[in-house]
Length: 463
Image (cartoon, rainbow, N blue to C red; front, side, top):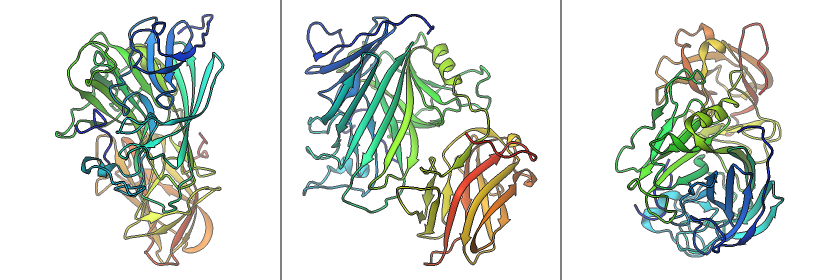
């Protein structure tokens, strides 16, 4: 799905820490690389200096290691390190305003810093303890002129050695109650200055073994960005010396990014920039509270990979829909909306409805069984599971298995013996469930959990 362009206009050790807190307008006392008219709030642990700008919605505009140059680009209000979300309708209009033609594809797109007309988002709350930062803002719709989003953003930031640990939250209060289709979300959007022009990741099928990293794929022009799966859960913007800015995304391996412009000095106002974002395809209900976590590592490639390795999954993925969709989304179907409350209640809206898992990485041999707790109300006698292999853009025709269902609406625990399918082998990155529902008023599926089981004799672990 479309994601923003290079510019938001057309094309550590456990050492003793000393933390510092400064909140002030940008002045001669601020380090070089602070954008103009900034109102800065700082964290400093002696290794990292982190600055958010209260004039720019509390987005991250400054990050440096040991007094070095600022890593973060602020050429316009679509850069920085910031929260950005997408939903329908596409195009999105408000107060009689229509987006410019080149922004129509964005749809509903609240952005933390501000909009394309140089208006800035409103700060609703700000706390800085010297060890942690919290900022709450009301974002603006990027393609429109000074139109607030019917939502709020929260960001919590702390420092851990050479790493920024972040928690982010969207709270929607939209007057439009339509459930729109899932869209790619930037979790978050990260823009670097021009020295950090190499986009590096590990995308192979032997994660966490020390195997060689690779450059991210080149984009398919005229699109400025490329997509890839970083199977260790990180991607980085590096200089030729293999140091720079790493984005670590526990539980997420889908990425977008690239470099636009010309490598050069660390000028935060330069149009040249590196970009990377972690992606997740999410339904954003009118009243949803949606949270995610990420980490920024300012350091060497080795430090970035070591930080990501802390989050190495110990088991195949397992999803229980207790209070969220767990990153799953729907195709030709809708559910009950937010809140989730222990299950998804899914109804078809078109032919061949599907439930689609988030991207992850595991080997088929580690997950011979799939256990689904569900209640089918359907005239069909079978449902099916498909899987997407590492290196493939979609399931191959042979990559599926069918299983019998009871269509009377009763709760059942279905155990699917994946290991009996000849094509269940090698690295897997995604599951798709086809419940066999017909688009009529009586067909629906209630589902509580989907769990890959690591052995035929043991229950699936909960993550």
